[in-house]
Length: 418
Image (cartoon, rainbow, N blue to C red; front, top):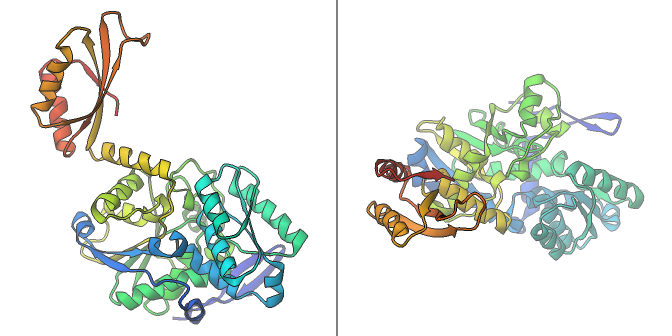
């Protein structure tokens, strides 16, 4: 299989360049001992849930907690001595910033990262901890990217693009080589897609060596930029709505990545935030793994759609950097989504024993009461009554449904809050 001509646009010039399997092998050899070979682990739990043979590619084990260090390190290692002396600059709100900062630290070169003003304080602190100069500018990635370009023009620093760069793509593609080494008879690989660097690298590494392997890209349904581009035949920009998967919330995919992906990917699918939350929750509870929203989209699609019966399937869990406040919300929403937590509001007469009667009915079904909130003072609460909000822990959705039916049978007036 001849895997060649891909197109990249640089400013107003159109250059042709080739990225082939041997380029990914070169990237692997250059990475040496700096980049970890992450584990590929069979999951009996997720195999039973999906009907596939699921092997998790645990890229969240990588240094800096994400696959991004692979491409950033290879790109920076590839710079000339003159380029290294002038330093590098990048724009990112998350994993790419940490990858570039850490790779720059290893090569002892100056590094400036432009991050949006609303970037996570934890990610800003992590980037600074690797020695990078962090500039907060703009409210979106696009605005930060404009600022990074201006810095490059003024200082001569090399821009390290997050995805649309041949060395970045080759560095990420090493993941594909590792998968084939550990699971030569893999049938399908599910790859998160934002700008497309990871997918383009996986395709280049895998398709030439074993074209029968299906590569499926997975995007957030709120940011289906690559899917729309493939469907129309040219790079498209999407408006984009909110998604918790900020790592793949890219409005416009790369030109080079688009050219590689458009003729070689087997399918692009999308997932919703609710599917992402469920997958994150299950990974934490069943697999004891904390994976960020963008990192679980492949597994989320497999769990929700079950598309690959009895196939050997690898979803790439591409990152594990998640804000701790968001993590708490994921746990709460995951419990609710899976019928493991239900919150109800009951209005009772404000008299002794009224609450006990309700508690006894709930306890009779072995449902655990996690939290009780009394409200006598709100304007919506009538005099002589009390509003009681109960957070209840149930075993599963079936028990939650039994609880609701039991309360209705006892003529207990309640409202389900979540």
